[in-house]
Image (cartoon, rainbow, N blue to C red; front, top):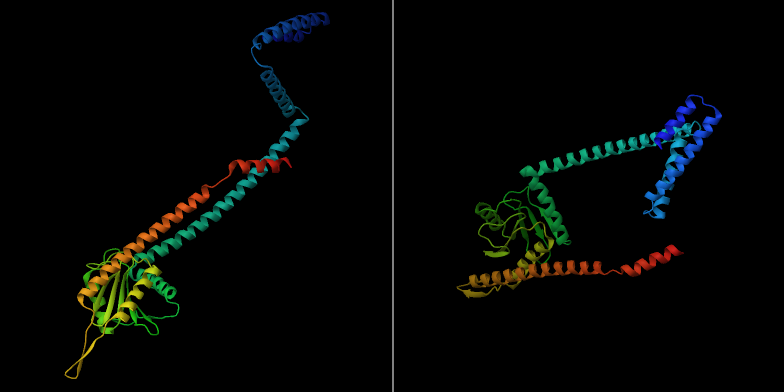
Length: 323
């Protein structure tokens, strides 16, 4: 085929006569016929569908190329390319603007996070933030109670809860990552004795040295509760206050006359140990029940989400498409 085309070009270039050109065309026609026969032989094993796709593809490509390089189609092609370039430039400009805005917002958020982190790294700022969180938790837990900020006063803990017909309760808040040591515990006990109030020592992020979680101590006429890893849990704080209220109400004050004096008999050490044991079991059962309910709730949601009707939904979608 290549040789035939070259031969025809040579004949035309040398300005051959019409008869010679006709002769060449005749020979070329014969070559094309032979080529067609050969091509059919090679395509014998191919399917008609594949041949049709190839011919259609070849025709479309040829038309596209011819239109693109023709004199009439070239301006149109240039116009299409120019319009595409303008759209791309506009989209890139929008993307650049969005990136700049996102960068600005990210920078502002990073600055805010850095400022917040610096506050928590500063012990005094961290303590102030924790006090505000505890004040919010106390306000939610006791909406009818009077909550006084005692931090400006020395030896008075952090907050005081006052309620009608219930004992006043002091709250000492700790945000250490380490366990609260005995020095801090002794300071708390000293404040309790000085003010003559029951109290709760809350360690938000750690344990308390030599004190069990929810341990109850009776100091004179007051009741003290120690809480570990509180994390501003409103229900835990409410439970501790309820424990103090019930023990305070159930205390047996026995008055005996002894030489014109009244002797008050408090709960015995055995009673306190028994209460602590029962309370520890209660807290353990409560936490296990909460965990069980959470797991059950999670499993129930998973089962509900797994309830699907894929075939019915598919039929409904097909029905909508057919309308």
